[in-house]
Length: 326
Ligand SMILES: N[C@@H](CCC[C@H](N)C(=O)O)C(=O)O
Image (cartoon, rainbow, N blue to C red; front, side):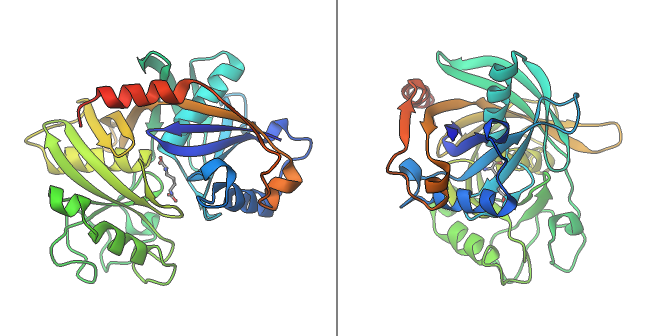
């Protein structure tokens, strides 16, 4: 079995093209493989935040389909950093630069764009559909929407906004001390304990600091993962809330620089005539290594015979990160 180790803003994944397997993995195997491979301690080469499974799409209008299985085996409806790496994989496999990728709820538009730096290829991915409805977020806060408001059981100091893009996100604009402190971990681990009544299915939680006009820093604790270097859908959701809540600094169609612990992406917030929003997420799609492994062993968490062939792209990416001022 062959996999690719990839990342977007150092949010790292393995890509497995199911169409290359003699037999596609069963649902139970997909989830077990993600848990084994992604384990940060005992997984494959330091693990990952998830596996991106690629298959044929539902028809010829899409280049392929992406399914996102988090490190804990749960499934996410979307992955913003992941879709750029899947886009690059499909772009190179099929020799195309403008196409669509099927995801759980939508076929999303992809464009290859100018590289961020030599050997740091970049892609622009559509992030949608967007919803603020509590029912789409599987959120129970006693109201239909939550926009810059308190959830008293979580904190009497931090205001949250909830938005599905379409995976669920809870966003709070905070000061620098709060951004780097322990509140994010405390609140997010509680909301992802599988027992709480506010988000029984969990939620991705992000703290956002405004650095300058059209420049924000986003730190995210992900559902099914924990702290991550970056979360593409969280950065898109944060950009949307930035546009809606900080009208003095930014607006629709403006390029926003989103810095994260793993690097930087650019976003733009758009609005359709019907009022619905969507975002462009532009960032790197880095291939770190090609991996060959024995399927039966991988499913048991045995990686001793895995063959890891690193590309030179990580050094190029690191050089790019060092060159940007945080
Ligand atoms: N890192 C991803 C989001 C992955 C899914 C998330 N953990 C969830 O369960 O919703 C991204 O870049 O968007």
